[in-house]
Amino acid sequence: MKEKKGFGIVEVLVSAAVLGFLYMALLHLQLSNRQTMLRIRGRDGAVEVAQQVLDSLQIIGAAAIASKDSSDTTYDGLDYVRKWARGDNNPQDSVEVRYTTRLTVKPDRQYKSSDSSLFYSVNHVYAKNISVQVSWPFKNTIQSISISGVVR
Image (cartoon, rainbow, N blue to C red):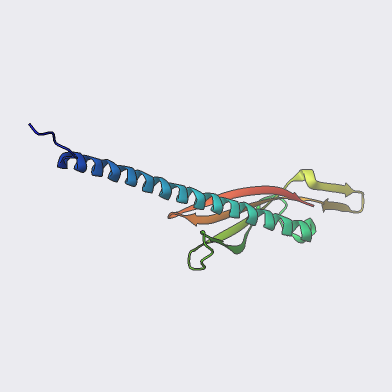
């Protein structure tokens, strides 16, 4: 009997199937990593927007922020747009995320001073507790974070 050299058709088909499965697994891993990167960029952008809003409110001060004494006061804030390049700085290959902000001013007796006499009563609010909620779309859902701070 002659010795056969080389691979048979069955071995070639099995190795092609194994390589196909490995390729699909690597493709799935790459897509999963990309989605995770986009989610992290979206969250980081939301934190940046929330901090920017809180810093802006710090600049104008607590006296310029209208609020109710007995209940929460809610304002719809501005929309912000952030853009990220995906890799090779190609303008057509970028991600754009639109962030929506909502501000809630909470009444807090801790930051209120009162003084009264027989003739008058004075209440002064020297700081306000502000909560900034930032929302953005991601994969057909709405993601959101909330950051709170005190504005004096």
